[in-house]
Image (cartoon, rainbow over all chains, first blue to last red; front, side, top):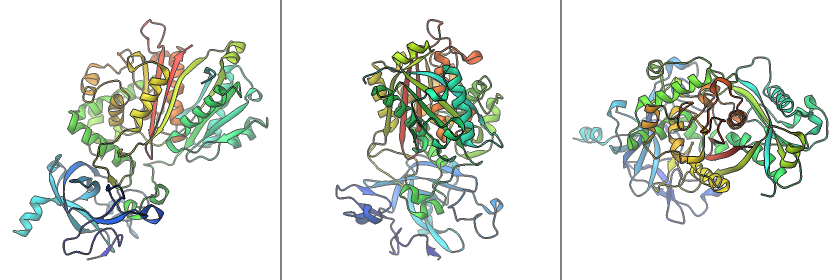
Length: 141
Length: 387
């Protein structure tokens, strides 16, 4: 396991949760605000499962401040690994933007069930992602 | 609004890449062209508003244009820079304080997609570091969901781009001036699924200047004026879905474009059915499709039929992006919104040559509509009327 890309982004539970915030109005937001914007906002563990709301591919090396594969020391576009990302609706809470792993573009459809996982990001850091629930359940079986 | 305001001069520096000429210098070229068009000298201009996103302040233009001591306000409003400059110039004249004002926007960006710093948008560093803070992703994510919900096909995305390059080939100020066929567009490398490289506009360079006048000044000059019937600028309402959002509300919120469009139509006292030519923000093909509905020109999903039937072509029921839009002109942020207004001025004055919209009476369009959208969730709409 690498370091968390942000120490406050997900919980240290055996089955981690993304950490959002509950506003005084009751609305759930992601991520947990920082600085003055955090006043009155309570950290809130988000649901681990949700449904796919939209998706796309990232096929080219992003510019700064991206620090993943392709942007490391001595690396270039040939080291970049295209990835999938999307928005995942956590029922009753919030829609979060995330990497999508353990799936192909052709597998993705609106409403498919996804679960949070923590994945290696670069030589130093881990990040969060969502993957199809069918995969998680197959691994558990 | 106490005074009617008219655009009496319009100038443009061609969009694209101009090596050896700074963004601001391109702005100066556009201002001189607008002055010539209006039959004015720089010394006649009483106040000015302008700016860029990446090419410096506008007020330094006085070095080249002349030290006439006019008040020159720099506008730095991201994608709304041009729209905000135009709104400010309009208000300056509508207030009765001035009779002649300049609105100018220019820019010059490096090649490739824009890169944004998370802190500039109040966002955590991890969002940018993990490669999720890209404007192109937002547009792909928004159209992907829209296509699923409203039955828009990839072919329709391609038809929008094909139209853009065809129209751009007829516009002297456009950057991409060669038609590209549908198969090439659809089979090009994917930038962010479902959008291929021909479906995205690129950052570019260019400048636009508009000279605004009060009604009495326009009449005194005998100028060929186009009336500003309404301008509306709106920032995002609660729960909206915008560029650069790690989290989106589960409540379906309003949209800045819908707010700006409704406000502009209400102010103008007309409806979408009265518009004869429209320039809609087309950062990518899907944006034009969604903005057709958000601006009230069709219902969600009807775009499939519109594009298949050519209804948004020059000569169609509502020509959209008659100069090829951002797809053919590129997007110099500070100038892009004013380019749309420039194109409508050109169309309403019937000076658009091969791309001229005939209009319902054959005398050119009466009402022209322009719409710009940008980060962090704002829209500006301008409705012009043939004088």
